[in-house]
Length: 156
Image (cartoon, rainbow, N blue to C red; front, side, top):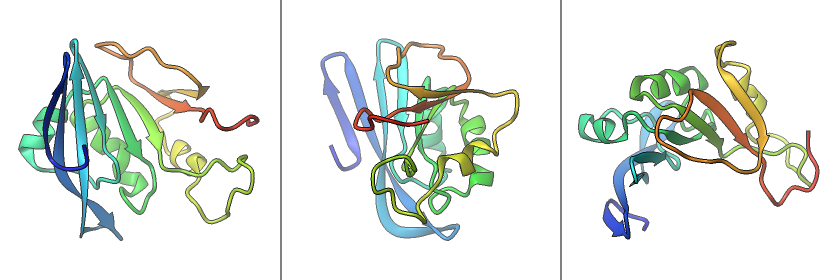
C-alpha cells in the first residue's frame, strides 16, 4: 500500500492518509503517506517522512496511538517540534526511525544522529535503547523505544 486509502486484512484495518515531506521547515510538494494500523484495540501510526500533520481528520484518527514510528531527521520535523507533536496526539511509545547507525559498517558522516534527537528528551521520559523485540498492546507506556536493527552485529 503506497497511497491514501483503507485496506482490511483479516482483523487489521490499515488507513493511509496523504501528507507531505517537510522542506526546511516548509511543506514541500513531495507526497508522503501516514499509515494508521488498528487491530484488536491497538493503534500503530507510521509517519514515514511526514511533516507535522495538522489536518483535524487525520489528527483525530492518529490520536492516542499505542505506538508511533517517527522519522527523527530534523529536515522532516525539526527536533524542537517532534515531541510536542507526539504529545499533542497523545502518542505513547515512540520508535525513532530514519537515522544513522554510527556503529554500522561504513557509516557515512553527515547523516542524522539519533543522539541529537534523544538529548532533547524530557529527563523524566523513559528511553529503552537497543531493543530487538517489542510486545505491542493497547495502553502502551509513555516511552522512547530505540530498536536495534537486526542487520547490525555490534553496537553500543
